[in-house]
Image 1 (cartoon, rainbow, N blue to C red):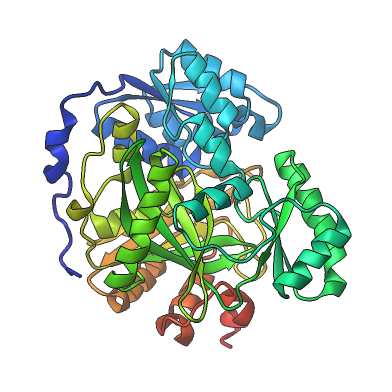
Image 2: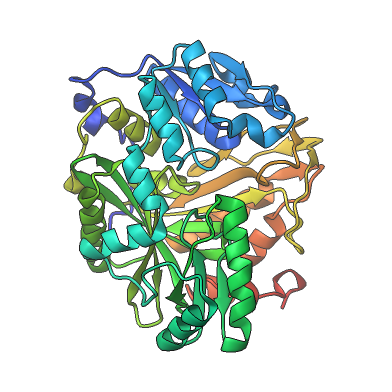
Length: 468
């Protein structure tokens, strides 16, 4: 692998910008750092950016920097970003050619994509039928099996009857996972270690699935002990697909990632699994950016988890090691451009690490909303900060606690760890608690430095901030 960064990554692909009509105006149906990230790519492409926003976000950077803001007034802050008809009307009102959903909220909602299509507005993402397929984990699992991806042993169908579910779990062998068939983000997942725990876990998972997704279907799957979480970044145009290698995302709390890095695999393994991922994307006619997620067991075997049919929070890691603006590529494909690069065009360079600077107590991981009285972000070669936060920003309690993403690039992993620790040490945020102390403790912990990390890392290292 080359250790020299790609200094001018877009030059190689500029010739592909001819032959299709770029959008004139795009509505960003999201908030926070991802709204600002999308806005920047739209500006680079010469596209006008309009940001839809609720009451709590009217003075945020994405709204202030956009060509226009559209206020969607709702008493519930979340409703401003979840009201499909209101967002469709906003897109029509401002004359948007397309809507970019970012991640979260309506990004994976097939009904939203359908309504936009009915109004002649492009949804920047996969087609509604593909969203519907991939949003059903059981249907997605079946489709990926057909395309050659490995999956863990499981029920293969929804289970609702307690006795049938327990019989399936016994046949698979404990420990098992009970997972919601709809939705994602780790919501509702229950790990069950013995039959005595199963019935209560089944009811809990069904209840959470119904509450979060309006669908109480669950299925049972073998739990891979000591597994690592590895994901592949994909771009497709509805016909052809390419991958940009993998990210390592095993440091998680409550099934939510807090540190991501890449690359992680050998070139041989990357090439082999990457080819299967590309085949899976092409098999379902995928269009846009997607992330294929896997667990890898202690023997090195991979098991498909799910496809996230949208831009991922940690897309930044791939951008740093591939030297490519993924958001812009996704927008260009949505505008009708054929896949603007081949697999041979994609070269990975060096190592990148991302830490999620969440406004959370680093000991309890509880949210810490409030006003930021002073804020300073780090800089320097190979240091990137994606954030909407600034001095005077009020971190609202109603939304996800992500305040910023700090990403570094260096020729080697060891140098990237040192650079990240230095960048975190330079970061100053007064007014809210953040995960920075936890991140720095992880970066200096022996198992992390030795790559001896799996998805149970935080549970196994609970004394990190106590020096244990």
